[in-house]
Length: 309
Ligand SMILES: Cc1cc2nc3c(=O)[nH]c(=O)nc-3n(C[C@H](O)[C@H](O)[C@H](O)COP(=O)(O)O)c2cc1C
Image (spheres, protein in one colour):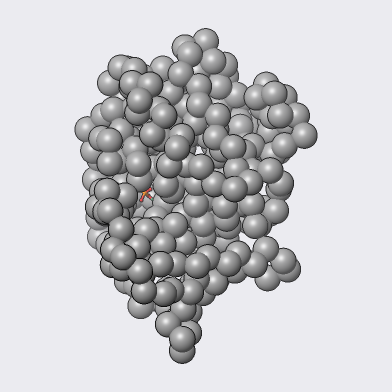
């Protein structure tokens, strides 16, 4: 259940160690870093937080209370101890295998204030704020930041080359490796690897991507921005826990979500975006759009044994 969590580029940058007393440690797998888009391992630690939250929810559904201890120092990790408790209500647990990043045009409809309240309530986490924008003018402003960030990334050959390494154009490669970004999961055409590579070179352009993001954001009901109180691995893990609960609650309500993180990934755009948010001293951590749309194919995972150490 933990490995089904959201994670940057679907690199699955985690290792799980089962200790003699029945506890589980979640450790970073630094061989799965994405150093161009994520030079300080921000996304990596957010991803560990997402996995930890799934694990805690799954344990709760099976009658185990989890005690989470985040070690944020020089070798960050998450220690989870379990004790017997009553089995918890399973709405978020049931959503774990159904949650997905849905990178498509949404239906353009608003979602109710009650649903927004539930999303915010589930995402509550010490040291993390969640700001929700539903107003169209605000969504347009966020769209401009996404386009600025995306344009910078698309103009950077190192970024595009690294992204391409994690793309899987064919089902054969996607299934064989069990990681990375499979085209079908983004609604893109599936093709043998060599054809997919040529299509990528021919059609993956800054203008087309920017137009796509504008349509995606316009069609969404809103955008959630996650901001940790501090910029360190401890808070990045907490941001991941908050986001994962948000995504699971959304899934339980039939609401989709997808990341539009370019403004926080590009170091020059991030402070401008923080000023626009009204938190100039903070480092905004995640930007996520949400709304309703049909499901896309689910992303793949490596066998669980590969992540156990
Ligand atoms: C920290 C973090 C950053 C992410 N950044 C992006 C992003 O910028 N764009 C995007 O489309 N998806 C992004 N994602 C979503 C992942 O690509 C996605 O979770 C992963 O491919 C697994 O797919 P799934 O969420 O459908 O299970 C991010 C996820 C996390 C946890």
